[in-house]
Image (cartoon, rainbow, N blue to C red; front, top):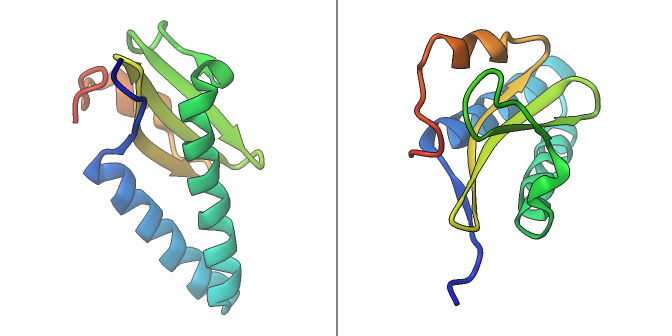
Length: 110
């Protein structure tokens, strides 16, 4: 049986880096930025064991699930063949629904 794995799309990795940079500059604290982005990464890794934790959003894109972290960050992901594929990470009111409605990403493909 194939093991489950977590896959970050390049876009999700770029989102984490951009978020880290934004928080570090806005707060003046690399520790604050690191702490927050690590909480996000840990939430992503927990999805491997609990992939149904996020809310299904098939109304927006087939197979899409979302997980809201600390009321201001949305992790979007797909579960495919037991793998959890982190699509993007949206922070601070970015319109993640419009992103998917504009068909910028295919379900679960990286």
